Image 1 (cartoon, rainbow, N blue to C red):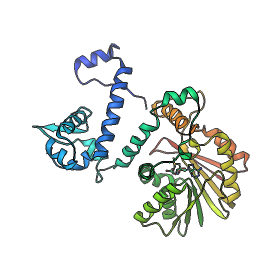
Image 2 (image 1 turned 90 degrees about the vertical axis):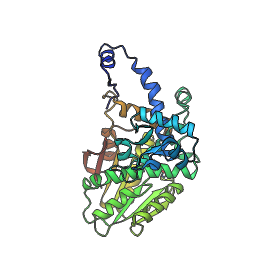
Image 3 (image 1 turned 30 degrees about the horizontal axis):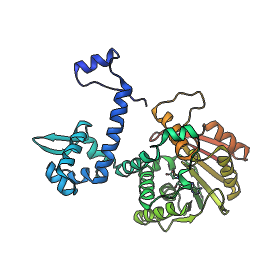
Length: 344
Ligand SMILES: C[S@@+](CC[C@H](N)C(=O)[O-])C[C@H]1O[C@@H](n2cnc3c(N)ncnc32)[C@H](O)[C@@H]1O
């Protein structure tokens, strides 16, 4: 997906058609404006306060403990960005806000917006990171509980959307034990347990991620089938006797050496006939086309982890080198990701 501008008025459309609109300035101004406004409004609780009602600025300000003057300005920006509608001095959520930003919306993604707000601060010193190339890796840093709550909340929302399609594409008949490495919230492990009778899962992750995962699995009613093991997957043992191992959205935070070490560790932890499934962002290779998603992924994963999404053929080669056979690659419809399964 590329970013492009569409004009509302005849004059705007003419300006765009004749190349008279400086797109870099428009994106620079409104990109940060949209991002900061939606995150601030979500943190403050504007969309929830409005719910399915129509309120004045004073009523929204009172419900969210904000100043009326500040709320008036924020609401103006949200109307401008198409997230609120205004009529006769009263405001209500626009269709996109109702669909994505309310807990009872068709596709609730409030958690993801809150995590993207955390990501804004991670990329704030981008130019320093690019100049120096010295990255203090995200998962090796201390973060407050609020960060882990937003992080795991966002990824678990994606897992709710994409999980059913992903587990449909994984073959593991008769599997008894699953290890979800870097499985965090545990929702992919839980989705697989729902699919395969009798399957139980261990989610192996850092202690603060496990704390969030335990809470989410309690809330989802799957805590009896999904357990959590705290540790560092690079240095701590994984155990043995697994029929299936997931490594989902982990390789883009890992260096090439680390990905190969993870694949070898998976081989050692699996029973004969067991399988490893790697899922991650698609990467078209060194000279492949880069759209906004693929290009930003490259920069974002570098800045947060000194790593990158790895081309699928390289991951396949590393799996084959480690002795995995019958490698099967499947694309996903819900998200621009791939699933790669190989058997011992
Ligand atoms: C991008 S998240 C993916 C979470 C989940 N697998 C998913 O796909 O939604 C990366 C996960 O790897 C975990 N992780 C990163 N480094 C780790 C390490 N050294 N040891 C254990 N877990 C780690 C993070 O805590 C996080 O839960």
